[in-house]
Image (cartoon, rainbow, N blue to C red; front, top):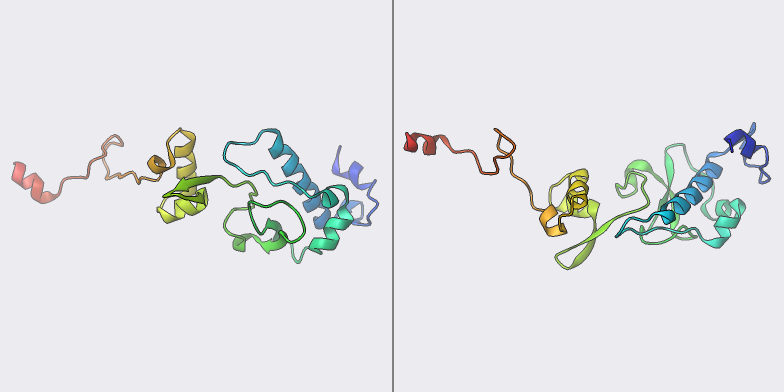
Length: 172
């Protein structure tokens, strides 16, 4: 169903010239994300649910979270392990909501006996998040995936440090 067809049936008054408001779009996208994610959850991820009141009523959602302060704001879960419900959702700026890039589904791994997000683990071990995710997807354990790979130039298969000029002179 197209956005135009859907907007002609809106009864809550949140349509400007037949186009849903940003708040209504956020509500629709929140519900869609939760339904889609729950159909094929990835192992180790938390799938946030929408509380019954918000799932049934856009008006209830809007009364709890209020209007979107600016186009730069996104709907954000205060606690990534929680659900979309009053007290756990707020509008936040993209850059200041914890670095999740707008994603609501987080993967957690166990590092040194603590449960941390992949983003936190990557930052703590000076790795790119995508690198850590790729290593985990390859089947490595979290401990193996967090070990930094040394690359000193030359062929990529070389995992040993390059020899210093002193060691090269000693060999010749």
